[in-house]
Every structure is written in structure tokens, then in C-alpha cells.
Image (tube, rainbow, N blue to C red):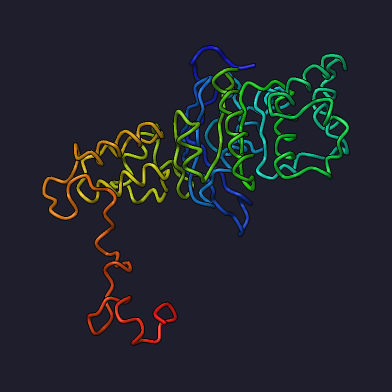
Length: 339
């Protein structure tokens, strides 16, 4: 299914797109976007709502054709009117943000088998592909094949939509907000399966997400889109390390990175480019042990992470307006606990 080498499987060059082009309602969406996706990589595309993410990925399998610029998939130029779009869509599988947009058969098995059957693939092979695809996403073939698509949970629908794309054996899997609306358990399970597809099967994965934990977990490379432009391109480590210097990116960070940034702002010498759980734990442990504490810290003592921020005034520090501790002479205030 996937490509074994690390050549470029998809490139975007100077891509522009305007909705309702040539009308008074024209709305520019992309401005000179350049992007390179190596075979076998996992690439995240992030940015605020309206930044052009969905418009960009719809060019990858020819749902939108280049108005200006170029998109090349495995050597095929999508600006060429003669290009075989059906062949492109067999190579590039797109899973929409809302699974209902691509589930239309009554039974799960029929929906997953729809694509390869339309391609004329023999039924026996389609059954084997469906079993494989359903197994990859965590759906039991015998249990789910005759299940109604209208009786599934949101997480199950997302898995069926993904299986319906994987059954076509694409070389590139494009996911638009793959975990939107999932509960934490389903989200973790789906992310693990996507990661396995990329790392074990060699499938090239491109995904759009607002969740920086997902970016940290999956991505080799990150592109940040802002107002239709590429505002940043680099590794997750480079992105998270640049957030203080690039507030214009307006992207968040995983909780672990936020912890390290908070420690750094208080004078602890931690590496804010580290983001995996083991890396963050190592940095926090070093700070807690005093190895990387502030150069001059009288209170709290260097490395004492249990001390509250100076702005905190909990019950142990709060005083009444007359200067008394809130629990002192409770009976004078008619406090129920002082009776």
C-alpha cells in the first residue's frame, strides 16, 4: 500500500484558489501555497478556522483543480485537463471531517465494499480487502458487516468511513479533523491505528487538526496555514520551540510543552522544544531536583515545584479585613463550624 522510499509523493507549487472566481462574490482562499510531502511521512496541516486547510487538502485528490499553480501526485499534474482523476483518487484517499458525508449504504459491509466493487474488483478480493480494512480500524468483520450504518455511534461511523477509504489501498491517506467529536478512549484508539498505518504499513498520512497533542503524537512535519499562506514549516519540535518568538502563528501547544514554558518563564532552565511525555517528565524532574532551578530564588527554594504561584492566596495565607485568620474566632462570626 505505502511507498517504501522517501521521495516526494505529493508536491504543491505556488497554489492559488479563489471561490466564485470572476464574480462579484469572489473569495480568495489560498495564496501561493508551497508544500512537499515525502512518501511514507506523516504531515500535519494546522491553522485557525478559515485559514484554507480544507481548501488545500481538497486539491490533493482533484476535488478542486488548480486555478493557478500546480499540484503533482506521483508525477501526475492535476492542472492537466487530461489527467486521469479516477486514478488520482485511487492513490489519494480523503476522509472528510463528518463521516456522514461519505457513508450512504444501509449496511456497514456494503458501504465499505462500495468503492472496490465500482472499480470492478472481483468479489472474493473485495471481501478480503474489507476484512483487512475493518481489522485495521478495529471493527470485527463478522460482527459488523450486517450492522446498520444508521445505528452506529459517532466513533464507529468514523471508523467505517476510514475503512471505506483504506479498502481502496491508497498510497496517501488524507484526514480532515480525524478525531473530531470522539470520546477520549475512541480518540486514543483511532490515533494509535493511524500511527500504525503510517509507521508499520508505510502509508503516507496527511491530516488536518486543531489538537496539538495529535500533532505531537503523529506528525513528522507541520505546516501552519494563516489566511491562505504558509506561515510556518518545520518539525513539531521546531514549532513548539518557536512559539514564544512567533506569536503571530496563534497556535497552541500540548500540555507538556505549556508546563515547560511556564517553568521557563519563572526562571527554570528547561528545554521548551521537548514535547514527548518522557522528555517533559525528564525536564520537570530535573527542575524539581534543583538541577535547573532559577539562578536566584529565595522563595520558593530552587526546584520547589510544589510551592504555589505568588498570586495564589489560598486559605493558609488569606486574612480577614481586620487581619485575623479566617478560621480564628469562628464563633465571633457565627460560623457554623465554630458552634
